[in-house]
Length: 129
Image (cartoon, rainbow, N blue to C red; front, side, top):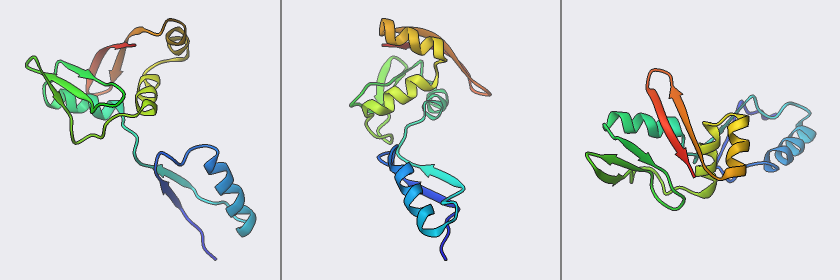
């Protein structure tokens, strides 16, 4: 009798992987599969903004295929301890800071200027294109 409280995996384990895994496991055991899901590999915009504030950067640049880049004292400095960004990373980060109306506008115009606030960190001006 084996049960798991936590299921962990990489970002490649996305829908429909979970639904298949849940169905197979629950059909076999007759019990709920897990209570908590944990995935690694995703880059979080709030973590990058926190790093930018800590390093006194004036800008944070994110672009597919590159490490995130900070502008510090006028010089662009890649954050090499963070992996190069995949398309899904940048899309997820951009959409995570948008509401539904902003997402729709971005899909129509392919560009968006918005403000984004992180509690206890600051308010940020964002240009997504």
